[in-house]
Length: 466
Image (cartoon, rainbow, N blue to C red; front, side):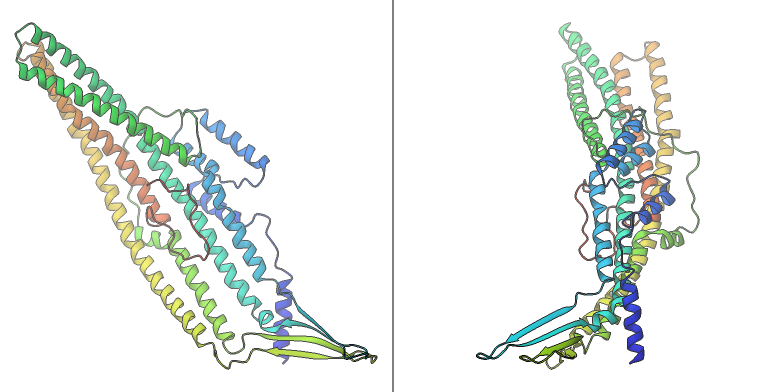
């Protein structure tokens, strides 16, 4: 009895501490992003804070935009991300609610027989089980709150990944547009020359048609490249939360690093740092706590204890107490325990699956990174220089009147694929570098968190453009 009273006393003390935090749980998310990326994140919860963020974004956009700048703007200005921060407030409200006592029950009955004075019964009761399990319920909601913080942190870091992808895609698309425009001008000049020579009557019709066909294809390729550039830029704008803004971007992709990165113990790093691994472990612990609660309330699901008083007619009030218990005649609670045990075993297997997936994905991401580096380096150091030497030799032969102008133009056309592939290979390297970092610190590229957080869903507008 004394032990039960002590438990109730501690529960009442804990209930008195159930209050909202000043930051709504955002500080943990902010710390995660700052530690992993060195970037600032802000939750605009008032018009003044929103205006302050817009001023910061405008200052960043005033200069030429780097990949890091684009990421910073996205973290501050993506409206879907700002909307998702409300999940923190919702989870914290559940946490505070779990740490508060349930309202007492008050009952009143009044019975009057004939002309006699009425009989009045009153009772005020509290659910003892809810008081005794209050610390356990608070710990469960605290774990769920932590899982929501993991999820929000993950969405922020995935936004970083997608913004970097879109940034490099935009630079590559702009480069291809400029190159395809040069190709189109060359093709138009060749087609016009072929037409004039055909009109002079000393030029084969087949050669003229080939030049005209190439000119038409060059125009089509330019149109497609322009649309691809618009699409890439618009996706970057969406991720950055911008509209109707003229971005100032570099004219070309960053150069390839001198040497590729060689991180050590990538599998151990992934298991230590990946948010999906941490979230899965957190969820498993929460379900384990839920199993303990199910067993504690298996036989006695509702137990109420309260003070009661009764008044008969003109007699004074008589006092006592009232106990209300749910009798397990039909439902002995076995189904609740069985469900909790099944959920726990499911969570254990899920953690194992997440760990296996994490180790595999980080190995695959590193292989893709090294492959992309070697490919871009091959184009930079061998294919493109070799094509240039061939072009220079062809130009020398043309100047020596050993070949004609159309042979010179035909050689120039052969360089188109090499230059285009070189640009795309460099773009793919920077995207692979981003994916490797994602696989090491966040989780599966393009996938949501592995943790099953009840009632929490991804917000449209954050990572939905695929």
